[in-house]
Amino acid sequence: MDRLRSEHQSHCNRFQRPQAIPGVSVIQFLHQALAARKGIDLSVAELRLVTVGWMRRLGVDSSFIDRQLNEGFSADEKQRHEMLQMAILEPEMASTGGGIDIDIDIDIKAIAAQGIREARVDNPNMGVVLITNDLRLVDAVTSDDIHIHILIDGRIVASGGRDLAAQLEKNSDNALRTLSIGV
Image (cartoon, rainbow, N blue to C red):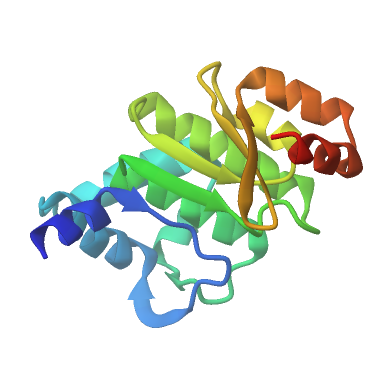
């Protein structure tokens, strides 16, 4: 159980449709999550100072901190909240994706890219699993140290670095399916 708890505490997941929790504010949620994640008990006032600094960096409105958790959040507010959690909780590994590139506004992709870049400034060893089909998002988020894995029908069919990203940008999905046969 300790190993499981340790692994859970070092990973930050994104949820496509996070549940609203009436009666729990964003700051209360972050306070409890930080205490569980790092075992430190900052006062709410201390956490508020840290959070407000991150909110400025991430372009989050200052009133956001006192809102009810996920209640009435727009798509961009959900994305900003995810990035705020990533910044405050400082996970060793963060995973994001799923809904951030299918039929959504380019601004939300920019929020995700900015949030990941900002969080990695203060937490440079944080790994990021970015699940996307948008190579522009990959380019906006990543450094030169990138490992790309292509999944088709639930199988990894190709792996590589920036060279694979460049190859993917030149090819259509049909070309990728042809590529996957030879792998």
